[in-house]
Image (cartoon, rainbow, N blue to C red):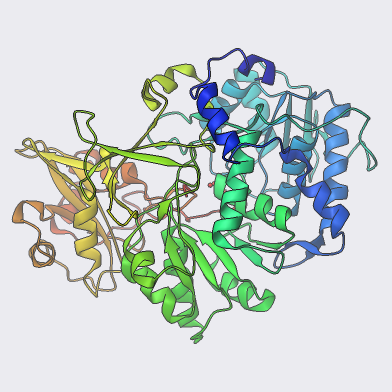
Length: 579
């Protein structure tokens, strides 16, 4: 993939709309590649990255980044080329990400969760000129996996770099040494693509999402101003740096304002509490499981207050009770809505009333337009549920594979989000579910989200996820997975919980499992496909497992796959939010 190739494609958003955004100040001529360099010049000695074991200043980060940039250039990467990188969340990831943008290349991070098939798909779509990874993971041989994938797709990048370890055919990421970059090497222009992110790929192969410099600059300005982040903040990030949440809030925002990024390569709620209190961290973003486990870790540590001032929660359904529980610790948590294709569709902040932070998903972000349509494509009124469609200056340029764009965009340039919800007369957005999270029972359709909310309102249920399981007389059965300290749940009691919340009897679960935690991907989103497999009687050939599923008993060890992949496993265990 090269910048010049992308400029030949038709743009989803026309020049007239872009001119409007430019006039409104949402599109500027700023270049994102100077982020780290400018911060290191102004405040060289301030901490840029803090981890459990070390602190790295902005000057140190910039020096590492310059060495990687020089190595990429000397290895044959040119402005406009793409570079794929896979690194744990930490100083090396910040340095590599900054280096790629500084030389005007396109950054294409790969989540460490991806296996060989996904890595091969990413490389085949991007066809990178350079690759940056590491060779010191105790569980996986990433250089070997890259080599095998490149061989499969018959592609040879100009250079392969390692931030740690050694492998034949790979060079040190800093082999060219530190120093100034050659004259004339400048970051990408505002209209150029600069970032390719990949969706989680839980249902199909990963899709490459392409963002421009101007889009990311608008994202930066919006989030910084709406959340009130300054150089006085310390921002905790435990999501992979290779996901939009980690990249934005672990590198881009801190570097822009001069805040320290408190980075965790592996999610550990107890360690997170320690880091927050030891560093005086003030801000954190993450998916629902992170916040739930963080609050539990504070309780386990006997702490009744947190240094955190605010917590931005998204990526998965957020129970209102969770936001209220955070408030009891002094953390002003709030919900927002976004996706890889348009990272921050709505915003809220710590100054908003608790009721709105707990019960809504924010208001449309500056510059973002939202429309709500019914099944026929007609607009609906305030408070009416429909499909949510978006358009805004931080929207992606499109997918690498053009065939995906036809399904993603309307003819008039609106992004089909696949989310259901409504816009209230008060201007606040409420997400009610996904188009794909609709259960169809004999033609009667309803959202899984309302059943999940009903179950989670029970004091003995810490978390719940509901899916449609194929089969039964009406075509789909209602399956539920619950996290609970109780082991004596029955379908009858779950049914009473649902109807007791005011829902009809035909929304009662027909299958359920008690699990230690809900299956999630690396960014904390519930993996609904894994839940279907967990609940579907037809996928298990073991009669005991089928009986257990019908009775709702807990999972038998060694029979079914572990439903709890770590919400944010690091490379040592082996990925992203949407916002």
